Length: 222
Image 1: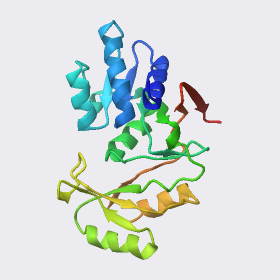
Image 2 (image 1 turned 90 degrees about the vertical axis):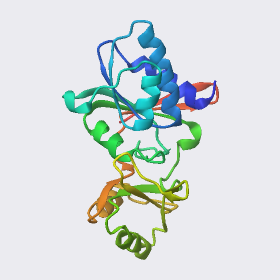
Image 3 (image 1 turned 90 degrees about the horizontal axis):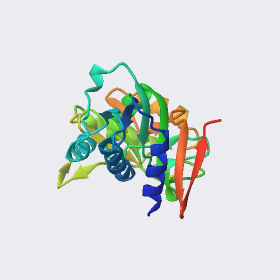
């Protein structure tokens, strides 16, 4: 079993009958959704909310019903992956392009668990490019601002065209190498008109489950 699968299956222990579960997006969440489908098939009763078209398609293919978030008042537990996590449990997310919905779901959840393999744990955030979701209108002016700030922006592409999020926005990935103050940076970028969401997830995760070799390590927010 690989580290992603180990972390994903460990997170299942936090799921209780009757819960409303937020399902994240990405390669680690893939293992979670597959295991969850098994448990639902064996009698577990939960309601699920999805953070992306990708996760919804996977869940539906495994006969997991995805509820409209607008029909629910809250979420008990959201389990999601992360692209980087530091020792303060702050992270970078959005490599899969779902940062907006992931942050909306997280902000309405009673508990957040991130599941990662050991390679995602870092001392300082920033090696992984920071995704910034932006509206397409006037995107070149934002791109220029990021360039002037020295953020080394790259417009995300897919299939020879511009990558579109589920909300039909663009993503600019910032190649920062090192982020000294992630809270300050998040606020600075978010204040720019045209920015929809920033892939910095500060003070959000309550628990991080790390797959390490053949076992898992659980870190809880202090």
